[in-house]
Amino acid sequence: MSPYIPTRTGLSRYCDVYGRLLASAGHRVRVLADCRGVPSEHPAPGMRVDHVWRPGSLALWGLFDALRTDPGDVIHLHHSFTAYGGAPSVAIAPLALHRLRRIRPLVITMFDLFPRSEVTTELLQMYDIRWPPPLVWEGMRLEVRAMSAYADKIVVHNEAAMEILEWDYRVPRSKLALFPHLMYRRQGATQCLAPRRDPGSRPQVVLFYGFLAPYKGLEVLLQAFSRACSRVPADSLVLRIAGENHPRLTYDYAAELGRKVARLGLTSRQVEFLGYLPEDQIETVVASCDLFVAPYLRTTGSSGALSTAMGLERPIAASALPALAQQLAGYPHTCLVSPGHVEGITKALVELARGQGPTSERGSMESAPAPTSGELIAQTIAIYERVLERSGLRSSAVPPTPAA
Image (cartoon, rainbow, N blue to C red; front, side, top):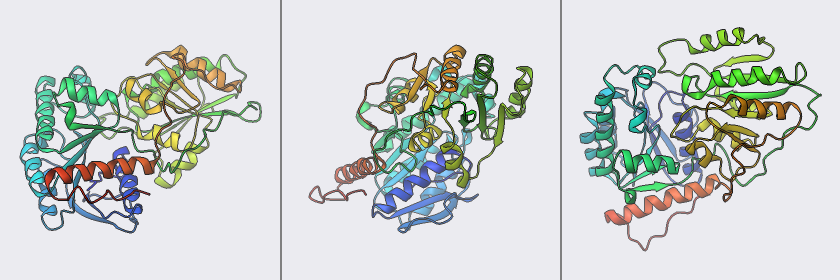
Protein backbone atom coordinates (compact mmCIF):
# COMPACT_ATOMS: atom_id res chain seq x y z
CA MET A 1 0.00 0.00 0.00
CA SER A 2 1.50 3.29 -1.14
CA PRO A 3 -0.98 6.09 -0.47
CA TYR A 4 -0.83 8.85 -3.05
CA ILE A 5 -1.42 12.45 -2.17
CA PRO A 6 -2.15 15.19 -4.77
CA THR A 7 -0.17 14.79 -7.98
CA ARG A 8 2.03 17.87 -7.58
CA THR A 9 4.22 16.45 -4.85
CA GLY A 10 7.46 14.51 -4.76
CA LEU A 11 5.91 11.94 -2.42
CA SER A 12 3.12 11.16 -4.88
CA ARG A 13 5.59 10.64 -7.74
CA TYR A 14 7.81 8.52 -5.50
CA CYS A 15 4.87 6.29 -4.57
CA ASP A 16 3.76 6.04 -8.20
CA VAL A 17 7.19 4.88 -9.41
CA TYR A 18 7.58 2.61 -6.37
CA GLY A 19 4.24 0.89 -7.02
CA ARG A 20 5.00 0.45 -10.72
CA LEU A 21 8.38 -1.11 -10.00
CA LEU A 22 6.91 -3.55 -7.48
CA ALA A 23 4.17 -4.51 -9.93
CA SER A 24 6.61 -4.89 -12.83
CA ALA A 25 8.64 -7.28 -10.63
CA GLY A 26 5.60 -9.56 -10.42
CA HIS A 27 4.11 -8.46 -7.09
CA ARG A 28 0.48 -7.54 -6.51
CA VAL A 29 0.17 -3.92 -5.40
CA ARG A 30 -2.97 -2.34 -4.04
CA VAL A 31 -2.68 1.44 -3.70
CA LEU A 32 -5.01 3.28 -1.32
CA ALA A 33 -5.18 6.76 -2.83
CA ASP A 34 -6.37 10.19 -1.82
CA CYS A 35 -9.87 10.78 -3.18
CA ARG A 36 -8.72 14.08 -4.73
CA GLY A 37 -6.75 12.45 -7.53
CA VAL A 38 -4.02 10.01 -8.49
CA PRO A 39 -0.93 10.62 -10.65
CA SER A 40 -0.97 7.17 -12.27
CA GLU A 41 -3.77 7.33 -14.81
CA HIS A 42 -2.79 3.94 -16.21
CA PRO A 43 -1.53 1.69 -13.41
CA ALA A 44 0.88 -1.06 -14.33
CA PRO A 45 -0.45 -4.63 -14.66
CA GLY A 46 -0.84 -6.04 -11.16
CA MET A 47 -1.30 -2.56 -9.70
CA ARG A 48 -4.75 -1.58 -8.43
CA VAL A 49 -5.64 1.95 -7.30
CA ASP A 50 -8.55 2.60 -4.91
CA HIS A 51 -9.55 6.13 -3.92
CA VAL A 52 -10.54 5.65 -0.29
CA TRP A 53 -9.36 8.44 2.02
CA ARG A 54 -9.56 12.20 2.41
CA PRO A 55 -7.08 14.45 4.22
CA GLY A 56 -8.12 15.24 7.75
CA SER A 57 -7.94 13.93 11.27
CA LEU A 58 -9.54 10.60 10.24
CA ALA A 59 -7.40 9.93 7.13
CA LEU A 60 -5.44 7.04 8.66
CA TRP A 61 -8.70 5.64 10.04
CA GLY A 62 -10.05 5.53 6.49
CA LEU A 63 -7.10 3.36 5.48
CA PHE A 64 -8.06 0.84 8.16
CA ASP A 65 -11.63 0.59 6.92
CA ALA A 66 -10.47 -0.01 3.32
CA LEU A 67 -7.97 -2.69 4.30
CA ARG A 68 -10.36 -4.96 6.16
CA THR A 69 -11.59 -6.51 2.90
CA ASP A 70 -8.30 -6.95 0.99
CA PRO A 71 -5.26 -6.43 3.23
CA GLY A 72 -2.66 -8.19 1.09
CA ASP A 73 0.43 -9.66 2.79
CA VAL A 74 2.09 -6.49 4.09
CA ILE A 75 0.84 -2.95 4.72
CA HIS A 76 3.41 -0.37 3.58
CA LEU A 77 2.59 3.15 4.70
CA HIS A 78 4.48 6.02 3.07
CA HIS A 79 4.27 8.67 5.75
CA SER A 80 4.87 12.39 6.03
CA PHE A 81 3.68 14.62 8.88
CA THR A 82 1.73 16.69 6.33
CA ALA A 83 0.56 13.93 3.97
CA TYR A 84 -2.67 12.76 5.55
CA GLY A 85 -4.29 15.09 8.01
CA GLY A 86 -1.39 17.26 9.13
CA ALA A 87 -1.45 18.45 12.72
CA PRO A 88 -5.11 17.47 13.38
CA SER A 89 -4.35 13.81 12.59
CA VAL A 90 -1.72 13.43 15.33
CA ALA A 91 -4.23 12.64 18.07
CA ILE A 92 -5.82 9.75 16.13
CA ALA A 93 -2.57 8.36 14.69
CA PRO A 94 -1.62 6.01 17.57
CA LEU A 95 -4.98 4.25 17.57
CA ALA A 96 -5.13 4.13 13.75
CA LEU A 97 -1.63 2.62 13.54
CA HIS A 98 -2.54 0.08 16.22
CA ARG A 99 -5.58 -1.01 14.20
CA LEU A 100 -3.54 -1.25 10.97
CA ARG A 101 -0.96 -3.47 12.68
CA ARG A 102 -3.72 -5.82 13.86
CA ILE A 103 -4.58 -6.55 10.21
CA ARG A 104 -1.14 -7.30 8.75
CA PRO A 105 2.57 -6.61 9.39
CA LEU A 106 3.21 -2.88 9.03
CA VAL A 107 6.18 -1.23 7.28
CA ILE A 108 6.45 2.57 7.33
CA THR A 109 8.68 4.71 5.11
CA MET A 110 9.30 8.11 6.71
CA PHE A 111 9.60 11.32 4.67
CA ASP A 112 10.14 14.92 5.83
CA LEU A 113 11.56 14.31 9.27
CA PHE A 114 12.26 17.35 11.42
CA PRO A 115 14.74 17.36 14.32
CA ARG A 116 13.62 19.18 17.43
CA SER A 117 15.87 22.17 16.66
CA GLU A 118 14.05 22.82 13.35
CA VAL A 119 10.50 22.85 14.74
CA THR A 120 10.42 26.64 14.83
CA THR A 121 7.86 29.38 14.27
CA GLU A 122 9.28 29.93 10.77
CA LEU A 123 8.78 26.29 9.83
CA LEU A 124 5.25 26.17 11.22
CA GLN A 125 4.29 29.34 9.35
CA MET A 126 5.30 27.69 6.08
CA TYR A 127 3.02 24.75 6.86
CA ASP A 128 0.26 27.08 8.09
CA ILE A 129 0.32 25.51 11.57
CA ARG A 130 -0.66 28.04 14.22
CA TRP A 131 0.18 26.11 17.33
CA PRO A 132 3.21 26.83 19.55
CA PRO A 133 6.40 25.01 18.42
CA PRO A 134 6.79 23.07 21.72
CA LEU A 135 3.26 21.69 21.39
CA VAL A 136 3.80 20.72 17.73
CA TRP A 137 7.08 19.03 18.57
CA GLU A 138 5.43 17.01 21.30
CA GLY A 139 2.71 15.90 18.86
CA MET A 140 5.30 14.84 16.28
CA ARG A 141 7.26 12.97 18.91
CA LEU A 142 4.18 11.09 20.11
CA GLU A 143 3.20 10.15 16.54
CA VAL A 144 6.69 8.78 15.79
CA ARG A 145 6.70 6.90 19.10
CA ALA A 146 3.41 5.29 18.05
CA MET A 147 5.02 4.26 14.75
CA SER A 148 7.93 2.78 16.66
CA ALA A 149 5.53 0.83 18.86
CA TYR A 150 3.31 -0.58 16.11
CA ALA A 151 5.46 -0.76 12.95
CA ASP A 152 7.47 -3.90 12.27
CA LYS A 153 10.03 -1.80 10.40
CA ILE A 154 10.58 1.91 9.74
CA VAL A 155 12.41 2.67 6.48
CA VAL A 156 14.44 5.86 5.94
CA HIS A 157 16.57 6.98 3.01
CA ASN A 158 19.73 8.31 4.65
CA GLU A 159 21.86 8.12 7.77
CA ALA A 160 20.88 11.65 8.78
CA ALA A 161 17.24 10.55 9.10
CA MET A 162 18.29 7.50 11.11
CA GLU A 163 20.16 9.74 13.55
CA ILE A 164 17.18 12.06 13.94
CA LEU A 165 14.85 9.15 14.68
CA GLU A 166 17.33 7.59 17.07
CA TRP A 167 18.39 10.70 19.02
CA ASP A 168 15.49 13.17 18.72
CA TYR A 169 12.59 10.72 18.66
CA ARG A 170 14.21 7.88 20.67
CA VAL A 171 13.39 5.17 18.14
CA PRO A 172 15.57 2.05 18.63
CA ARG A 173 18.01 1.57 15.75
CA SER A 174 16.95 -2.08 15.57
CA LYS A 175 13.54 -0.87 14.41
CA LEU A 176 15.05 1.08 11.47
CA ALA A 177 16.03 0.02 7.96
CA LEU A 178 18.20 2.16 5.70
CA PHE A 179 18.47 2.16 1.95
CA PRO A 180 18.81 5.01 -0.56
CA HIS A 181 16.01 7.02 -2.09
CA LEU A 182 14.49 5.16 -5.03
CA MET A 183 16.08 6.47 -8.22
CA TYR A 184 13.50 8.05 -10.49
CA ARG A 185 13.12 5.59 -13.41
CA ARG A 186 16.74 4.51 -12.98
CA GLN A 187 16.83 0.95 -14.27
CA GLY A 188 20.54 0.14 -14.16
CA ALA A 189 24.03 1.42 -13.63
CA THR A 190 24.82 4.29 -15.99
CA GLN A 191 27.59 6.76 -16.64
CA CYS A 192 26.88 10.40 -15.94
CA LEU A 193 27.04 12.81 -18.86
CA ALA A 194 29.91 15.28 -18.62
CA PRO A 195 29.30 19.03 -19.04
CA ARG A 196 29.53 20.37 -22.58
CA ARG A 197 33.00 21.52 -23.59
CA ASP A 198 31.78 24.02 -26.21
CA PRO A 199 30.37 26.83 -24.06
CA GLY A 200 30.28 29.22 -27.01
CA SER A 201 27.65 27.28 -28.96
CA ARG A 202 24.73 28.36 -26.75
CA PRO A 203 24.17 29.47 -23.15
CA GLN A 204 24.81 26.84 -20.54
CA VAL A 205 21.49 25.98 -18.87
CA VAL A 206 21.33 25.90 -15.07
CA LEU A 207 18.14 24.33 -13.69
CA PHE A 208 16.38 24.34 -10.35
CA TYR A 209 13.34 22.07 -10.23
CA GLY A 210 10.95 21.54 -7.33
CA PHE A 211 8.56 23.36 -5.05
CA LEU A 212 9.59 26.96 -4.38
CA ALA A 213 10.22 27.62 -0.69
CA PRO A 214 12.69 29.75 1.30
CA TYR A 215 14.53 26.76 2.79
CA LYS A 216 15.60 25.62 -0.69
CA GLY A 217 18.13 28.44 -1.03
CA LEU A 218 16.74 30.09 -4.16
CA GLU A 219 17.65 33.60 -3.05
CA VAL A 220 21.23 32.44 -2.50
CA LEU A 221 21.15 30.86 -5.96
CA LEU A 222 19.96 34.11 -7.57
CA GLN A 223 22.68 36.09 -5.85
CA ALA A 224 25.32 33.58 -6.98
CA PHE A 225 23.95 33.58 -10.52
CA SER A 226 24.15 37.39 -10.63
CA ARG A 227 27.81 37.28 -9.55
CA ALA A 228 28.62 34.56 -12.08
CA CYS A 229 27.05 36.54 -14.93
CA SER A 230 29.32 39.50 -14.10
CA ARG A 231 32.42 37.28 -14.48
CA VAL A 232 31.70 35.53 -17.77
CA PRO A 233 30.84 36.71 -21.30
CA ALA A 234 27.30 37.94 -21.85
CA ASP A 235 24.71 35.27 -22.62
CA SER A 236 26.98 32.48 -21.33
CA LEU A 237 24.46 31.31 -18.73
CA VAL A 238 20.71 31.00 -18.36
CA LEU A 239 18.97 30.01 -15.13
CA ARG A 240 15.66 28.18 -15.34
CA ILE A 241 13.52 27.84 -12.23
CA ALA A 242 10.86 25.15 -12.68
CA GLY A 243 8.15 24.62 -10.10
CA GLU A 244 5.38 26.38 -8.26
CA ASN A 245 5.02 27.73 -4.74
CA HIS A 246 5.17 25.10 -2.02
CA PRO A 247 1.51 24.22 -1.32
CA ARG A 248 1.95 25.05 2.35
CA LEU A 249 3.17 28.60 1.75
CA THR A 250 0.66 31.31 2.60
CA TYR A 251 2.18 33.94 0.27
CA ASP A 252 3.42 34.18 -3.32
CA TYR A 253 7.08 33.26 -2.99
CA ALA A 254 7.53 33.03 -6.78
CA ALA A 255 6.56 36.69 -7.09
CA GLU A 256 9.03 37.54 -4.33
CA LEU A 257 11.78 35.77 -6.28
CA GLY A 258 10.78 37.70 -9.40
CA ARG A 259 11.24 40.97 -7.52
CA LYS A 260 14.70 39.84 -6.37
CA VAL A 261 15.64 39.09 -9.98
CA ALA A 262 14.73 42.67 -10.89
CA ARG A 263 16.69 44.11 -7.94
CA LEU A 264 19.77 42.17 -9.05
CA GLY A 265 19.50 43.66 -12.54
CA LEU A 266 18.93 40.31 -14.21
CA THR A 267 16.70 40.03 -17.27
CA SER A 268 13.97 37.59 -18.25
CA ARG A 269 16.38 36.16 -20.84
CA GLN A 270 18.86 35.33 -18.08
CA VAL A 271 16.37 33.97 -15.52
CA GLU A 272 13.32 32.06 -16.75
CA PHE A 273 10.48 31.02 -14.45
CA LEU A 274 8.89 27.92 -16.00
CA GLY A 275 6.19 27.42 -13.36
CA TYR A 276 4.54 24.07 -12.75
CA LEU A 277 5.80 21.24 -14.96
CA PRO A 278 3.27 18.61 -16.07
CA GLU A 279 4.43 15.06 -15.49
CA ASP A 280 5.11 14.44 -19.19
CA GLN A 281 7.47 17.45 -19.40
CA ILE A 282 9.67 16.80 -16.36
CA GLU A 283 12.16 14.46 -18.03
CA THR A 284 12.53 16.70 -21.10
CA VAL A 285 13.25 19.83 -19.05
CA VAL A 286 15.64 18.14 -16.63
CA ALA A 287 17.48 16.27 -19.40
CA SER A 288 18.05 19.55 -21.31
CA CYS A 289 20.00 21.26 -18.51
CA ASP A 290 23.79 21.44 -18.29
CA LEU A 291 23.84 21.73 -14.50
CA PHE A 292 21.13 20.79 -11.99
CA VAL A 293 21.28 22.80 -8.76
CA ALA A 294 19.94 21.96 -5.28
CA PRO A 295 21.15 24.86 -3.09
CA TYR A 296 19.07 23.90 -0.04
CA LEU A 297 19.70 25.72 3.24
CA ARG A 298 18.33 22.79 5.21
CA THR A 299 16.77 19.39 4.63
CA THR A 300 16.77 16.10 6.48
CA GLY A 301 15.24 14.04 3.69
CA SER A 302 16.41 12.85 0.31
CA SER A 303 15.29 14.91 -2.66
CA GLY A 304 12.99 13.47 -5.30
CA ALA A 305 14.00 16.25 -7.72
CA LEU A 306 17.65 15.35 -7.17
CA SER A 307 16.86 11.70 -7.87
CA THR A 308 15.22 12.77 -11.13
CA ALA A 309 18.42 14.57 -12.18
CA MET A 310 20.53 11.57 -11.15
CA GLY A 311 18.30 9.18 -13.07
CA LEU A 312 18.73 11.39 -16.16
CA GLU A 313 22.51 11.58 -15.61
CA ARG A 314 22.87 15.34 -15.21
CA PRO A 315 25.85 17.09 -13.59
CA ILE A 316 24.77 18.38 -10.17
CA ALA A 317 25.73 21.17 -7.75
CA ALA A 318 24.14 20.74 -4.33
CA SER A 319 24.46 21.87 -0.74
CA ALA A 320 26.71 19.72 1.41
CA LEU A 321 23.92 18.80 3.80
CA PRO A 322 24.25 15.26 5.21
CA ALA A 323 21.06 13.97 3.57
CA LEU A 324 21.97 15.31 0.11
CA ALA A 325 25.64 14.30 0.37
CA GLN A 326 24.62 10.75 1.25
CA GLN A 327 22.12 10.65 -1.60
CA LEU A 328 24.82 11.79 -4.05
CA ALA A 329 27.56 9.52 -2.71
CA GLY A 330 29.22 7.68 -5.58
CA TYR A 331 27.52 9.82 -8.24
CA PRO A 332 30.05 11.38 -10.68
CA HIS A 333 30.16 15.05 -11.74
CA THR A 334 28.90 16.25 -8.38
CA CYS A 335 29.86 19.57 -6.81
CA LEU A 336 29.10 20.07 -3.12
CA VAL A 337 29.10 23.55 -1.56
CA SER A 338 28.43 24.76 1.97
CA PRO A 339 24.74 25.61 2.54
CA GLY A 340 24.14 29.32 1.93
CA HIS A 341 27.66 29.87 0.52
CA VAL A 342 27.11 32.29 -2.36
CA GLU A 343 30.69 32.23 -3.58
CA GLY A 344 30.77 28.42 -3.69
CA ILE A 345 27.78 28.33 -6.04
CA THR A 346 29.19 31.25 -8.04
CA LYS A 347 32.43 29.33 -8.63
CA ALA A 348 30.50 26.29 -9.89
CA LEU A 349 28.50 28.44 -12.33
CA VAL A 350 31.60 30.24 -13.64
CA GLU A 351 33.34 26.89 -14.24
CA LEU A 352 30.25 25.68 -16.08
CA ALA A 353 30.19 28.78 -18.33
CA ARG A 354 33.82 28.12 -19.21
CA GLY A 355 33.11 24.53 -20.20
CA GLN A 356 34.69 23.02 -17.11
CA GLY A 357 33.18 20.45 -14.78
CA PRO A 358 32.29 22.13 -11.47
CA THR A 359 34.63 21.11 -8.64
CA SER A 360 33.51 20.51 -5.09
CA GLU A 361 34.80 22.65 -2.24
CA ARG A 362 34.20 19.61 -0.04
CA GLY A 363 36.36 17.26 -2.13
CA SER A 364 35.36 14.07 -3.89
CA MET A 365 32.99 11.57 -2.31
CA GLU A 366 34.26 8.03 -2.02
CA SER A 367 31.42 5.53 -2.04
CA ALA A 368 30.09 2.46 -3.73
CA PRO A 369 27.92 3.07 -6.82
CA ALA A 370 24.29 3.86 -6.06
CA PRO A 371 22.03 0.79 -6.23
CA THR A 372 19.66 0.40 -9.13
CA SER A 373 15.89 0.46 -8.82
CA GLY A 374 15.80 -3.33 -9.10
CA GLU A 375 18.27 -3.70 -6.25
CA LEU A 376 16.26 -1.36 -4.03
CA ILE A 377 13.04 -3.23 -4.75
CA ALA A 378 14.81 -6.50 -3.91
CA GLN A 379 15.86 -4.99 -0.57
CA THR A 380 12.27 -3.92 0.07
CA ILE A 381 10.95 -7.43 -0.65
CA ALA A 382 13.57 -8.83 1.74
CA ILE A 383 12.19 -6.54 4.47
CA TYR A 384 8.66 -7.76 3.72
CA GLU A 385 9.78 -11.37 3.95
CA ARG A 386 11.50 -10.79 7.30
CA VAL A 387 8.51 -9.10 8.92
CA LEU A 388 6.19 -11.81 7.58
CA GLU A 389 8.45 -14.49 8.99
CA ARG A 390 8.57 -12.82 12.43
CA SER A 391 4.79 -12.49 12.37
CA GLY A 392 4.38 -16.21 11.68
CA LEU A 393 2.45 -15.52 8.48
CA ARG A 394 5.00 -17.10 6.16
CA SER A 395 7.49 -19.91 6.67
CA SER A 396 11.17 -19.10 6.49
CA ALA A 397 11.41 -21.90 3.94
CA VAL A 398 9.58 -19.73 1.37
CA PRO A 399 12.27 -17.78 -0.56
CA PRO A 400 11.78 -14.06 -1.29
CA THR A 401 10.23 -13.26 -4.64
CA PRO A 402 13.01 -11.83 -6.87
CA ALA A 403 12.61 -8.24 -8.04
CA ALA A 404 13.18 -7.35 -11.69
